Amino acid sequence: MRRGDIEGAITVIEAANASEEDSDQSRTPPSAAQLAARHRAHARFIERDPDGAWVAVADDDEPLGVAESIRRGDFWGLSMLFVHPGFQSRGVGRQLLDATLGYASGARARMIQSSTDPRAMRRYALAGLAMHPAAFVNGTPDRRAIPASLAGRHGDQDDLELVQEVEFQLGRSRTEDVAFGLEDDQFRLEVVDEGVGRRGWALWHPGRLFMLGATDEDTAGTLLWRYFASEEGAVVIDGLTSHQDWAFSVAHTARLTLRVGGAMFVEGMTIPGPWIPSGWYF
Image (cartoon, rainbow, N blue to C red; front, top):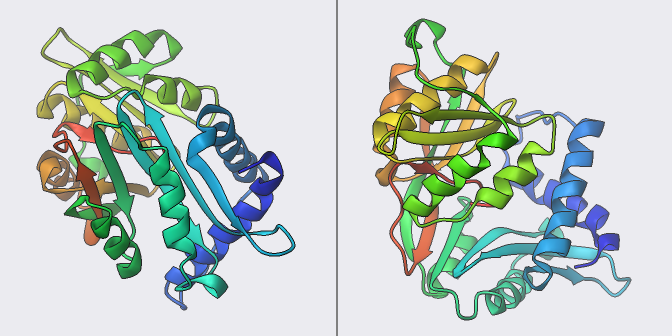
């Protein structure tokens, strides 16, 4: 993937997402700020993980499929795989997945967060990853349910050492991805720092929890409540499996809607409990 492919890749993703949504759902066009953030995020794959970023192109060199993956030490994750609806079921997705899997060579652990597309789930299962059905939560939190007193505070770049220490305990390494997110004014960080056994962080931007990590489930729940308290409208949290039952408990108390959809595929690892993934940077 090259920088000149970014605009075409975004067009592919928009078309693929539109084809998966219900026909009676209206879609709000992205704002200029959202488009700029997407360009910046795609450019980072080209700079940070060039061997994991691929496009399938037509004869005129226009992208008709895109796949992006990351390596963080011995961890590999497929961040996205999209094929334009007009070129699906033609082997394009399989070729893109094969290309990104080359970037996984030597990795101890592999992870893919899948949509509900049965073709995608079949492809990931056949790649040797174990399937864990997942769910997502959305809606507007009932503010009456939010605890009056919550441990923690708003965080910033000075808290990256805390993020690193929590990530080490979880066996992950998302610190540089949190730092990248905090370079964007849209992102916010919540932290809890009450000693070795009660520490955690949550990165979010308006409308969506991006990712979360904590030393224990109580702290993870507190961070989720802090996110709800900071949001002014609807929220979305996805990539939740049975290992995140603590998150379901908070969501139910906040009277949010839970729907089963998609799956988490893993190999060479167990899914952490006090943890929420990001679809891009895990």
